[in-house]
Amino acid sequence: METTITAPAATPTRQRLAGRVALVFGAGSDGDGWGNGKAAAAAYARAGARVVAVDRVLAAAQVTSDTIRSEGHEATAVAADVTRWADVQRAVQAALDAYGRIDILHNNVGITSQGGPVETSEETWDRVMEVNVKSMFLTSKAVLPLMQAQQSGAIINIGALGGVRWTGYAYCAYAASKGAVNSFTQSIALQYAAEGIRANCILPGVMDTPHIYRQISGFYASHEEMVAARHKLSPTGRMGDGWDVANAAVFLASDEARYINGVELLVDGGMHARCH
Ligand SMILES: NC(=O)c1ccc[n+]([C@@H]2O[C@H](COP(=O)([O-])OP(=O)(O)OC[C@H]3O[C@@H](n4cnc5c(N)ncnc54)[C@H](O)[C@@H]3O)[C@@H](O)[C@H]2O)c1
Image (cartoon, rainbow, N blue to C red; front, side, top):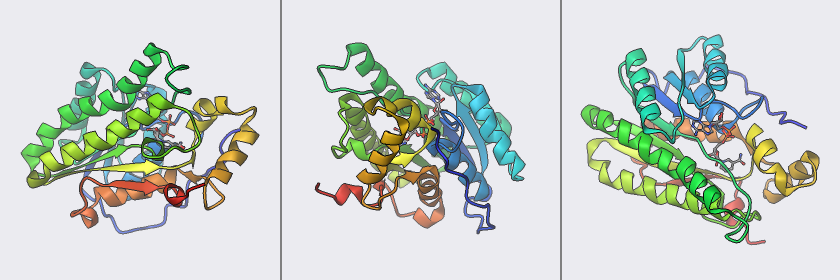
């Protein structure tokens, strides 16, 4: 069983991000369909931005950039591992070479691991922290000086509801890493607020993305069982999808959100407010 989420029609909308350049780390999708990063990259392009789609897997970045170009927008694909400083610097340079500036930094990369402290190995703990948190430190380190020079920029970091609530899954490293994403984002938001730079988090709840069929499925006997259980977890009776995250990201990156800084925007159908 695979995700069946399809892209909404590309209806003409106001070009909220016209002239902007978006650098999206983790812009590929972990399988066919629409991950949160791929949908965000496409949504930025639909809103007028030129997009640099970065992924550890070049082919995945290329699928995203090809999709964006097939809709008549501009995009470039770059291969880079977000846990490596040299790779991150190379991706940033590729964005500057292609489009001359970076207005939006979107950090989507995140991995899940099952287990509490007893079941989680030290190596797994370190890897989750490296991929989910250190990655954002490295990309911010590379991009913030450019945004400071421009005196403008928007950073969107993808956290998770699991970073602020128990969502039914025992994944202590993932939860701790996503909690760290929130405090890291808030720290940047406040340090650079007076320089025209905003940083915000999006916290997705249970989303139907290709990622869950690879990384969450181990909690269940089958994909069918997983999908049914995740629909049930949401107060809406349905999981969200990558486009729900993408639309929130376009808003946070746009000038319409110019006074929104340091927030954790829950995109979870209200799941955070549920107490059973
Ligand atoms: N799907 C959900 O239910 C859900 C819920 C909450 C939060 N999230 C968060 O959403 C984000 C991912 O969503 P997605 O569906 O787009 O996942 P995804 O796995 O489909 O996409 C992530 C992309 O990141 C790439 N990637 C992985 N490691 C990388 C690395 N070291 N360097 C560069 N690229 C790398 C993968 O190749 C993949 O193409 C994660 O941060 C995840 O924690 C998802």
